[in-house]
Image (cartoon, rainbow, N blue to C red; front, side, top):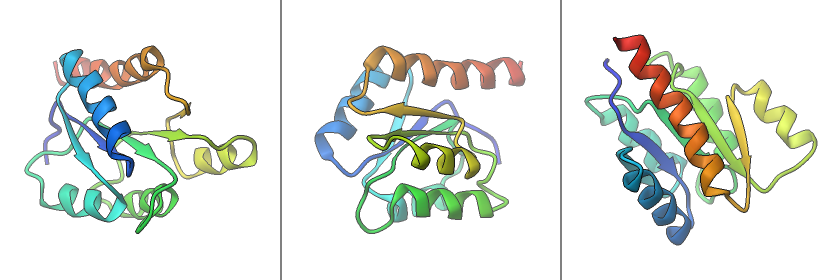
Length: 131
């Protein structure tokens, strides 16, 4: 399956999800959103193209970011999608996330410049690999 230009935003807080999506869209990076891990997995498995990057909140109801990431990494179809975690967690939790295969961790409150820098790194990398 081909990768698309969009970035998937998985965040349970509506206002935060909308802020991230708007920030990306204003920077010319298309996004698709999901309110939790279960919705995101369903969307990914039904998609015609996979995202270049997933921006993943960790503290969510229904399916936490940790649970989502474990399922994603165990699925051969989805496992190669890079993930940037967005978390208020500090300390040992961050080491645990790195072991689960998170490429980067952005701490809340979200710094828009850091978010765009991290996102562009993966979007640009994908562009250069497909050229």
